[in-house]
Length: 368
Image (cartoon, rainbow, N blue to C red; front, top):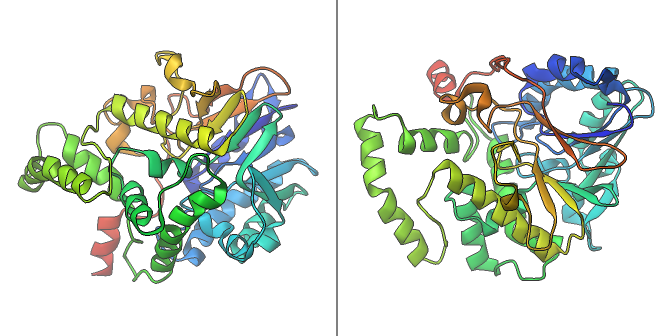
């Protein structure tokens, strides 16, 4: 996308060719600056060696498509925090809003990913906790929103427990304040993933979509799902009484959207991000879309929010609306030299190919 920059979330390995052949106004992605706001590789579902093996072909294809000298910036998040984990653990100076580092310094995993993405001569760097795409446009993965959310996800509850142990994120805050709460969680999930038994899944992996499907459902739910729905409000109340919250049992689409927007607004305000536009992912909810209330997508500090959505097909969130769903994969944000960032939906109405990797239940069945 000549003269512009593309911010996207790249997940499923089967979408590489689609990304490479997508064009906007006849301008090829080979001329773009590519900011992969994670998941560059999925490092929570199992050992890193398996994730790298699955991602290699896709990353090599992207690397060959980019012109020599093109800039690729990897911005780790919660699922691939290990891309920068060793460097972050050893670092003693403040991160600020953007610190760049060579992939070989960040971690062995980042070094390997950079070798594939740089196969065609692209310049690959790692930036954390975010990246200034333009003087007025800041991008980050968005995982820092978890301590401020009210949806009882695995990460939100774990962040609540950690906040009780080490203290909540202050206001104002630094990246180090968020890392103090979240990095121990990521280190634990990464360690568990490396030791996952054959046919298993890493700690917390693949649970959110299944839990949402059980709780929301379509009216034809098994006894287990009906029981879970009945006790869910009691569990929410118990979590709040324990001081892990505040969390809410409202899992409607409106609640999920507003939760992410309000929480990332907290991050922008506490970190002191002085940008007109802020791009994030994490929640998998693309936006703003034409039917959204754009006033929800502006922070108290005045920044306009943009979410690049997801490159992971999650039928629990998309089955009812298909390609019109805000959770439909294939989102990206185009940032040109001037003007507001533009939302791209690269898949259009085309259904994504299913990942070759089996689902959790299937993997366990094969292992057994």
